[in-house]
Image (cartoon, rainbow, N blue to C red; front, side, top):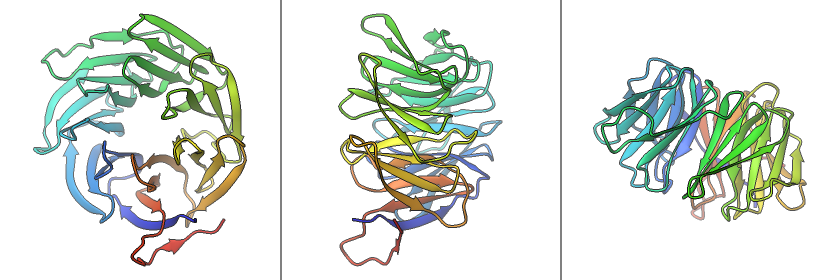
Length: 307
């Protein structure tokens, strides 16, 4: 069944740097070049709250497991921990020496993990008043572009072409070298594979435990953009943005292209967020985000896309 465009949100916050769903998909966050984070109802397009406090572009954000807090990172080198309801910063954390590119919460949202252009990964205890990082990883030779945080692992992708897995329980570091700058990394829901989006317009499927290259996916264009990818449909398909104003979907096992989601008027599709439980996908492009998904049962009029 084809996907349809369900809504477009004009974010009015300059260029949208990232779009993220909260834990249950009931709201989404957009990060803007105007130094603000906005909280939306993605289905209605209603703006719920604006969070202003960064002194530079907001690069990434994440919602906590109870949806009560947000953590955001910025070109101003800071990490801010926000109260969702009041819209006020609870903690302002400084330690990075460069733009902070990515951020994730751990499983119970007690620790925020951030990655920066200063080549470090820092862990922050957001529930205490401690303002210094509780742990700093300095092994990368270039910018940390993307993070995956699981129950006992921190997985960091870098433009130095390597994925580093920090096993917190065993106290071990594993480094898998791809050899091409990596702009984004995600893990399949079963935890067995990593998906690495690389600057050579190739997405690589890597075995989490062995580092073995399992498959490659091509057909999109990255040029010099940091373009995100994701695993959808119960780990059966892969989706990526593209510099040519579309999103590309592949079959995970066959490595074959399934469809292209073509969007009007071009613009790089660089950030995307699949709904945690449903079929909807949010795409960030230029100054707005679009939500695509399966047609509604109630006959809602939506715009169909061509193969």
